[in-house]
Image 1 (tube, rainbow, N blue to C red):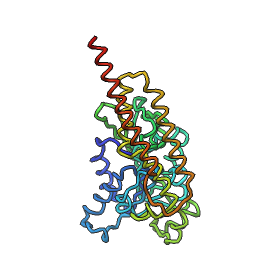
Image 2 (image 1 turned 120 degrees about the vertical axis):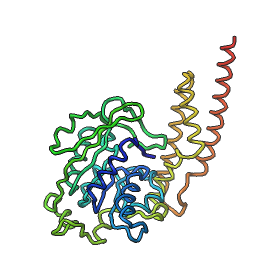
Image 3 (image 1 turned 135 degrees about the vertical axis):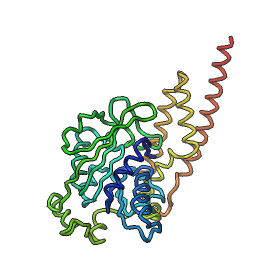
Image 4 (image 1 turned 180 degrees about the horizontal axis):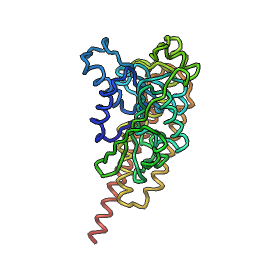
Length: 326
């Protein structure tokens, strides 16, 4: 589940309160933090507490469907599933485009293309939060999310190409630097081409009919997470990594690695291969009425494997202590 630092939250909420956008696009929804905060401070703080009274249009782009929960379906007006570099050009204009810890997950070339596209789709501002420096290593997540890995390193001067940017730096709890920058938006119907003209009227307001939205993306409500068979298959494969036994298994392997146990590397490789095998089986399974759940046979294998590795870890530690006593 995607998450990020907290030190910039009050500042970014202040930016949203200052801009008072009527529409927000949250790129890389992750846990849904910025959807919730935007909803709270743009609607609830304006006295619109009931969902029926909400006026701010909040949409999100998420590349990894397993991140989505019923919370997303409740808070966001619309969710677009896919790589933001590919999805964003198909969308219209928003007052604010927010990219929280997203850019570094792309290669530098693709990242610049994403930022430039975000500016084109933002009427007021494209807001970017991003880690600065080469001390932010991050690999694929335990849930199989390949988008979790960092693929580029960024420095403050990398944003010199954007005139008029407002910058603010923060430090995380380990003293590492990260940046929040507001980039002036450039969205106009002309800049966005025919699609932009369909999404904006003469006053620059969203004027797209529901039929156009339906062509451009898939609307996910709370129920759509289970009603779409293809998405269900994606999720059921990813859910393997979120099983309690799978989490226990990965943590045990991480602990053993930290203890420099010599057998960990081949054991980890075997476990990774097993997970890839199960996910591949899920991906090849034809859609059907099976519902959203990790496959039972895989659950049983992972539970037994977690128990076996836990027992192996206990034996290895006992042997290590016995040798140390000798």
